[in-house]
Image (tube, rainbow, N blue to C red; front, side, top):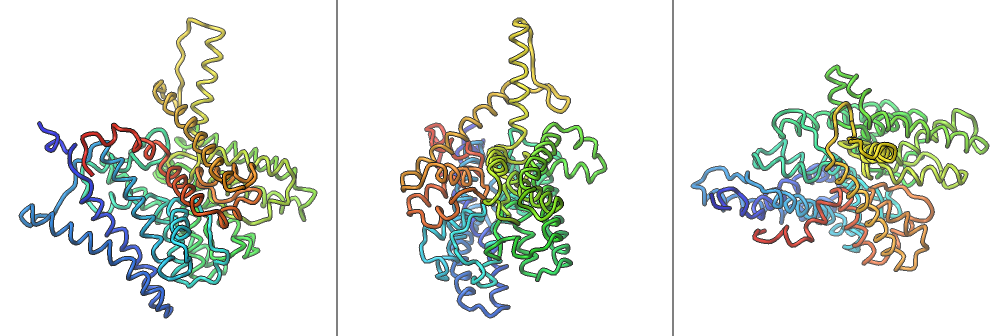
Length: 495
């Protein structure tokens, strides 16, 4: 069988063009808002931003159909390398297209900054270069929230679930952008798994929107902050974020949904199926609860002297710790005024991330759990040199290649963080602020210590482009991006 018959030599240009057109149609939502609120300039910006992708997709669709005798074109046979290339360029196209409304409307005059804002949205990082988001049109803010929502569950997952173009190649696409060292199928077909995850995602968004409305939010704020919370993004329609509402109710609703969004969605599905025992027995889930509990206790005790009450201290500690751990980046209090110990705990949480299979960024706790178990085995080997030990994760004996994969990922993660810190330092930024800024980008966190947010807004173009790349690499879990720079990813393949 030749390579073309196996699908290994198939170019990904056609599927990319179709994806590009489908993705751009998501702008019809803010376009409708622009028309309803009479924002004519924004309506024109969204129409112009959609025109090129849609026309390109139609052209490819018609050309492909004509070559197949009028039959519906399918792009099913992706090899592993083609799947990786498709995912990377699909995200790049999404981020570049998402920047166009900011740029065309003039609300972000610099194309570099517009791309940075778009990448921050789609990767659910949540760092904004817009100094005053409250002056933006309704439709523009809606688009900012929608980029979070689409990027949170994964642009490719939406495509695989809703458009059956990709057939058996779908697993290569989802596998390339799903978080965590192992991918968990809920059904035999990957499209079925994608649909279940999207159903949970949409249901959580609708429920949180309803609860926000009960708390007195207007429709735009309720929808926007639901998009941002479930995606663990952090964008807001207000400059002072969640603190703007000064409402314990809003904080508790946001907190609960942040924690759910930072949980493994496969375990959420099993809980809904009446199997809570699987979640209780899951090593990563237990680590998730433990990290939150310890962090909240330490922060609460350390900020009691500057808090109005013990309850207020506990709520602020709980909200902020969960916000950092899940990489959401919401703020309900000025944590920069907290004690050095409280800030140190927040800084350490930036190195963790929540659960695999969630919408959060970061390293993911399961990787630290695996390395912790391997460390325990290495200690046993010192006592019993001839013993054979393997890690057991959730009552299953772990493969040694997973340990290698996890160790390689964490090493690469910190290489990216250091490289990003050096990049920011080159612009004259102090070391700690540079390191913190790099952590925000690679971990898709969005809420940092020091002057990191101010650094991003005033950074020179080359730093913003570099950090945009780091945000995208972090969202795709690094390997998907790094492998594209190896000769084997391109040798004998066509784009």
